[in-house]
Length: 124
Image 1 (cartoon, rainbow, N blue to C red):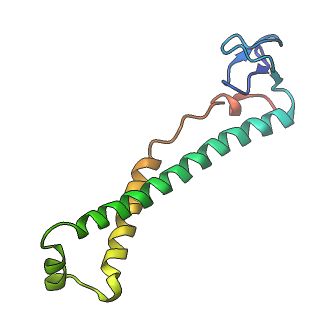
Image 2: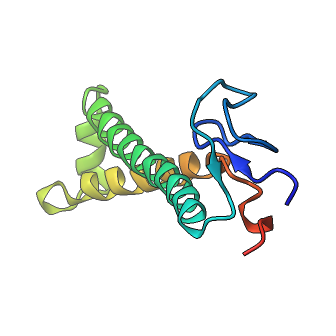
Image 3: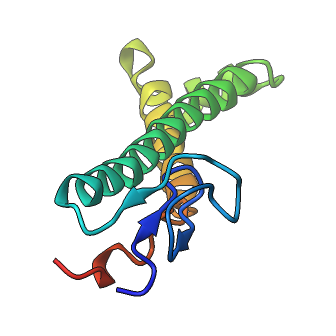
């Protein structure tokens, strides 16, 4: 391995320990250690988890906002009663859920790039 020292802040690799050449972080870690590789996997997993949580909240907010905005459209309640109304506003709940899932799916497709893309290439 020619560049065994890893910066956990920016993901840069370099041949010697010391300050990171990319971001200036003073803490470099040896990628030959299994604990460091586990930490790198954990950092990438936490970034994915934060992204999924953010996508879920965006979906919930958009779903609720669209349905509440529809309630303010003139004639919505009349059209709803004439065509597709379900008891206990169940149709509104279904619309919120469908919109939320669709938006969540779209936001999740823009997954963050892993910080340690070379992790699988490191020798064990």
